[in-house]
Image 1: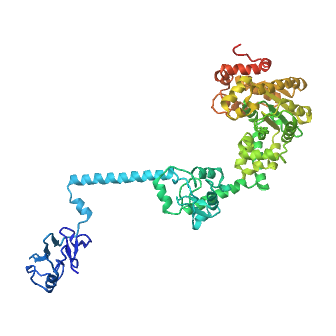
Image 2 (image 1 turned 90 degrees about the vertical axis):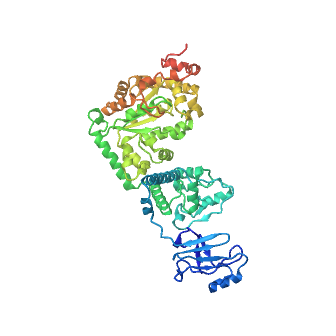
Image 3 (image 1 turned 45 degrees about the vertical axis):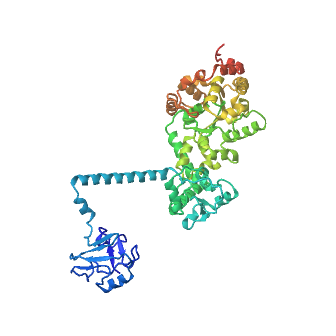
Amino acid sequence: MPKYERFGDGGERGGAEGVLDASKTNQYGATPTDAAGPNTPNAEPAQKKCTPGSSSSSSSSSSSSSSSSSSWSITTISHPSTINIEDSDKKYVAMETNKPKSWLAAYNSLAPRTRQTVRTAAIAIVSALALVAIFHLAKLAEHPVSENVIEEPPKGEKLEGEAQNWGGEDVYKAPNGKAFGAQGLANLQSGSEAGPAPAWLGAQFDAGVRNGGVGGVQESSPVLDVLARARPAPIHPILNVPVDPEFLHHDIERLRKRQRAEKRPANATEVAATLALVRRQVEAERKQLNGKNLRLWSVGEAPLRVLLVTTWRSGSTFLAQALASHPAVFHHYEPFSPRGVRQVRSGRDAFQAQQLLHRLLDCQFEGQVEYLNYTREHPEDMLGHNRGVWDACHKGPNFNACYNPSFLSQACQMFPVQLVKTVRLRLNLTQLFLNDERMNVKVVFLVRDPRATMSSRYSSVSWCSDHPDCASPDVLCSDLQADLKVATALQHLYPDRFTQIKYEDVAMDPQNQVHRLMNFLGMEFTSDTARFIMEHTQTDLNSPWSTKRKSSDRVSMWKKQLPLQEVHAIQNACGPVLKNLQYELVGQ
């Protein structure tokens, strides 16, 4: 079937545009007469002219029989490669064209100034595309897949392959592109916003699901929407972005292994290996000591047991750490922490506290379930103050050895000095231990100006305001007044095993005061202790639990922090205590 090309439509390209089909009629119902195209072998070089009504070929006669008032005229010109086609309304010229030049040849044929303009435009376009790509990649990394709150429970599309194993259950994909497990689907269908996270993923996964998981609301990102809907990829439980199923499976397995390792109790071999590290540390530090310090490790020498008793925000953490810097000290940090923010004064609480204290001073950790559970939940608070033990736990084959009662008992017995620092035990409960001379117990009672104590509680910690034992100046000074009466009696009964020390004296002259205290305890003031005191009293870190403070500036800081009305209220409640401790009154 002959084809005719429109003028200038590309010659031999043979495209769909500009091609006239000879079988089609024109707007008046006529069909063009047959003629040899410019590229057909039957094209005649002689000039021929066909007019309406004439018959120059069989095709023209057939055409004239079906033509209407307007018909085609075909003119064959002498040029061998060109045919003119004329219509009463339009003229078409089919002509042969050369093949298009390559883009490089076309570019080289341009003028130099034009080439420079083209280059500049190309660079600008490429730069713009690169910036757009970088922007969308940044959005992909920064924002999770956007989605709206699911008003109707999604039916879910079950994912196939390795994506099913991401959480130990079947994985489904919500219509909005979010992946979730079968449990999450059940919770959504029951009306909850987000299902519970698998236990092995921990709080971080649960927070990620509730802030941006199924049923959550996130900032919209078109690119991430497209990615979520383009493929049934699971969502990373922590990063909250679509990830490759194989990568997610590998990452989940790694997290599972780590969690299993963290929860697996230490076996006997691991406990023994960790104990060997503690023993090696103790032996290395003992070789650097001499004189009085070596006597602490003498065979048959009863361990020295020290009770440091005070109340919250009285400077006991610094003083206890200064004593624990001695290599012979095992530090039992706040053993009554599981009881919360309340004081142990009498009754059943007092009996249980004395029992626990007696066992800890004897290095007997077996059966102390509440204490060991709290230690597992707060390992750095309870064990981090024992440098040798803490380092061995990190270097050992299984950190859970630190929660093993057998390990703690044996490690504790390697140290000849047992130090207990507590802010929850009132002084009257220590007499039971002072009465037993075989226990070799010494008590240190630390006191501080109640105005400074209350100022520190108000400004440094938030948990104190919800508990009367900590927030009330009346309760503080009532306990202090009772403790001071007991201190007077203990000083008279046990002058060699009881001492009272003021925080202000330690803050103004820490080196000499700690030196005097260690002499009272029968311990030598070492270079490590002197270095610790220097590092922690010459710098100031503004943190409630930091022991690095410029101690001399802390003595009178309460005068700047407390309003005068609050100062008067504390002084009215603590008048006898302030007088007994010889603190000056303000505003009177």
